[in-house]
Image 1 (cartoon, helix red, strand yellow):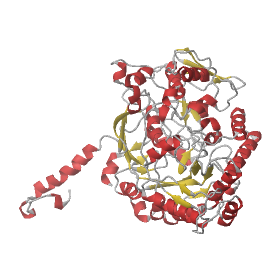
Image 2: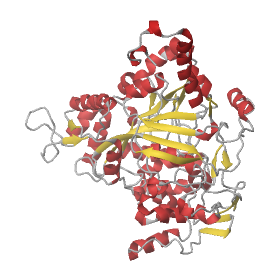
Image 3: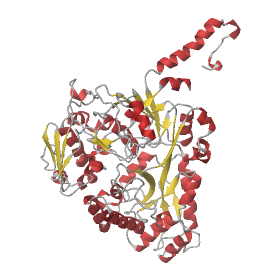
Amino acid sequence: MEDTEVPLIDRRTVLAAPLALALARPAAAAVAATTKKILRLPFRGAETSFDPAKISDLYSRCITTQILEALYGYDHLARPVKVIPVLADGMPEVSEDFRVWTIRIKRGIYFADDPAFKGKPRELVAEDVLYGLKRLVDPANKSPGATSLLDDGMLGLAEVRQAALDSRKPFNYDAPVAGMKALDRYTVQFRLAQSRPRFVTGTLAGGSISGAQAREVVEFYGDKIGDHPVGTGPFRLKSWTRSSKIVLERNPTFREMLYDAQPAADDAEGQAILARFKGRLLPMVDEVEISIIEESQPFWLAFLNTEVDALVTAAGSVPPEFTSIIAPNGKLAANLVRRGVQLRRTVLADTTMLYFNMEDPIVGGYTPERVALRRAISLAYDVQREITLIRRGLGIPAQSPMVPHTTGYDPAYKSEMSEYNPAKANALLDMYGYLDRDGDGWRETPDGQPLVLAYASQPEQIYREYNNLTRRGLKEIGLRVDFPVQQWPANLKQAQAGKLQIWSLGLSAADPDGQTALQYVYGPQAGEQNLARFKLPAMDRLYEQTASMVDGPEREKLFFEAKRLCTAYMPYRYIVHRLGTEVLHPWVLGYRRPVFWNNWYHMVDVDPERRVSA
């Protein structure tokens, strides 16, 4: 306690012994308060829902994957990544044509206690796995994951969904589905119409949308299920103040799980982490506190003042504007070295992008003049300036939808996506009739109507920098632009409804397959993952072909064609792949940046005594 907080005390009248005791009490109380291990993390954006059937944002997924579990996940330490069983009792039995997948489930796994179970323990069974997946295709949920799951071609699933749509009656969860069966209490089998070699990593791993759910919980909470996630995972939701704070606590009914992993033999860091924690009971922390801090400065100050323990890539790494302070010339600043801060930097499996609403009357459409407008807008944006001035060097230009660490990504590939060329942009606009007819310095549409672009934005300071860079580029080619401002969740909701003209956001890969990125240009995903509402038969054919092919040169050729179509039609302008700068206080132990997954909170430890002494 600071002196100014102690009123009306004359220090000359305070005896030495009572003073020593008074000073000792706060320290003792602080130590006592830290006996509970709490991992404190910040998010850069607000959550939207904790119902996996309705989630499309990273922030919410970072929470639900700690609560709900999927059949498979990823080894915390293995690099290259390795799929491991979670709810499954071993790897699947797979037919030679990759169409029949039979998976056994571990016995003795229980859901967290909840009033929906009426005081009785509730064991996970095969039907819970199937129910969680069926919820994605229930039309009432309007799930962003519906089309992706239907793409797998589970026999009979689309027909049950269509029956609900046609009859306008509730989805029949009891209707038999040939492609989704519980063979017995602990065995599920999936039968697919087409070959799906990556069915596990694409659908059954990670848990962000494929987590098992108990039907009675969903029915108990009804339309409030997004407030009450109940799963079999290491944590459960303790408290939640929307857009402010989320607290997870250790799930008291979580099964006995001991720390284990398989880092490569020559992976010194991974081997060291394994040696330290192997055999420890999981989770190693008692609670996880998530604070929503959208502005960059308070986000960084929260770390500097030890109010949060780490700034890491899953939903909140170091803001770019502070990287030169934290790591000048790429090395951790001396003051942070003295405090024992850990620095990590790596290329992320993600991309930032802006999309054009292909149904918008100004920027949408497939005619040559509309394509020319989108390409001109793209050519007017100086991505290298963004990387240098706004991102402080923490990014590499994106050339296509494919992101690092996934199939289809080629670091040598170059395209117009990264090109900054106002002269070419002006020439395109002139050629296709976007002219300044009244001499006011701004172009009109080919039919002479006023042309003002609407680029959706957010209120945080960092977006003003992006807006200024965008405005500067568009002014060079005679295009006016407004930046209507809303909070991120509101923009996402309007984007999914097709009500935004242009918006920029980021996406992170959830698995090693590059085809995931093509969901954003796949016609049937329009209004879901495909925010641009891009519909091109040639692209849809490529997407469907690559889905059934095994990885290899032939599949890579099709990915190349998909990249070319994305550049030619420009429904999205892919901007940068981010370089993540992570910092962790020294009391965070065992962290290793996940590549595609978010469920790692149970795999790290914190040292409360070291935190108190900091």
